[in-house]
Image (tube, rainbow, N blue to C red; front, side, top):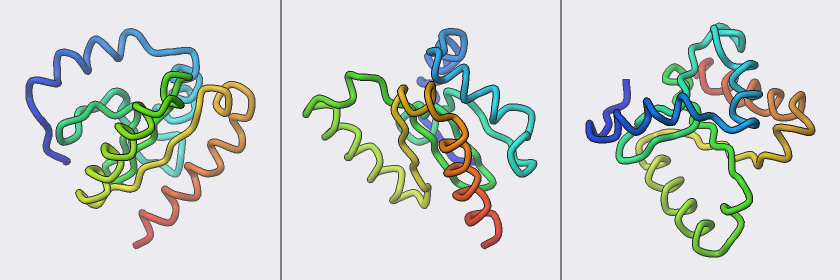
Length: 121
């Protein structure tokens, strides 16, 4: 299991109770080991961050971005965060709310491909 900053745990627990519509919809596809039999966690503390979804077996992070993530400051912050996670050997996938809400099949296909590739190695 990936280490994390212990002070993040209470906030991650609160976030699990306040999922966005897009997060709820994706969680229905990932929960209970539905995807290749691997476990995903939601709002999981990893390192110094809380990631939307995390699969330890595939060392995969899935982030869902709302509209605020498209402004310059957020793009930079997300880039720095993604790089920090990658240096820990994690693969990061990012989707926006619209992709989740309008084309769930394509999103799940991308996640399936990433998990499939990462668990066979």
